[in-house]
Amino acid sequence: MSAIVEVPGYANLRDFSRDFQGLIQERLERWQVLDGLLGFAWVDGAMGDTELPADEMKDEMNILFMDTYKSQALSFLKLQLPGISAHAWILVSMIPTATGFDFYVIESNAPTQNIKTHYEYGDTHLSMPYNSSWTFVPSLDFEADLDKIAESLREACGSQMKLPFAR
Image (cartoon, rainbow, N blue to C red; front, side, top):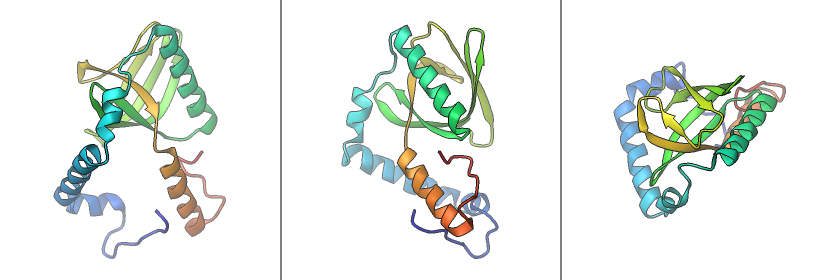
């Protein structure tokens, strides 16, 4: 993204997306297939871990928490599901508990809902709240893309603008 774009007749991206939901979904699915097959993104899905030893998972969760806590920003998480690397959450907040962390996320299949899930010390993976057989290890992703978006917004709106995803 190199510039802010105004779409005449629409107050915001949500309204535009609602009107063109079918077309947007079709294009995203086409891009996913092309990137997955021709761009060899399937290799990432075949090679990533869907679980880690408990001590490594704890380290990963602590790193994720520190990044989220320090940046006070939304984080884009790639969820490494078995054979798939294309699922994602937006991490809204991560709260330490006596036994692990509570995650509050926006799930890409239910974008209007905040979903709560939990990591318990000793766990080797996380599970989808709506399908516990889908296990995964989350990782930060697309940080460079978010930085580009933030830069464009700051250029258009002022350099002191606080963005919810800017690091």
